[in-house]
Length: 330
Image: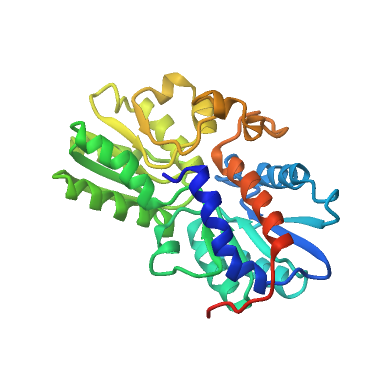
């Protein structure tokens, strides 16, 4: 996992190429928060990310520094064609300088390419596929907070080394889930474990009974949930109904947020193993960090997607203020 110190050190170097070329449009820094506002990822990103971005701009004191910063937001509906259309509209017509957030890896991969073509900047904190820093790596994109390689090597590595050496995957059938399954399976096999089976489910599924019964029948020690958001919480709730943990198997949540635990309740989350990148109550430093104060959302709990939105928007404002013309590698 990246520390905030290492991220703050790396970001200015990356922005020197990408943001400087993207020249501030019409004297206004425009930040587009492109997110899932209405579906399975809305609790961990959505409108809360927009609120967090506004908090970051206020915290940075842009107005006092004579900077004009505008926050735009839109719902990509978890559809790559919709997300791509919004990104092109923002870049070409609305003169947006940088797009941030973008949960749903398939959409992030599309925005990644469009951003490179337009010579703009893209800060990803919602999407997780490690392909964003692998085969689809771009000088215009910064991948923030977590990726599937990190999640696999955090949760997966620790579980195998403590005896969880047989796995069965329940995987969201799109770019993120497939990358998370791929990266976790590689860690399991590297450490001498075995994958006894895997099953794929559609994005935003409601009924996981058949997938869970297959996992239960496999007798694998670990049921790996290679999904996120509403898919993960639905999986865990229904696993409790089938008595999977009580039957001796363990659930490995490969991407779980603090807000998920609050929503599930401790009774249903019993036996769940997962990795957190940021936990507000970890130590005195995190408890007294300005990022620990949640924005005014209904749940009053903020997963680290929103902490990331605050930090990345602060940095965006700083780097645009310092930006100078340069040439972006194509």
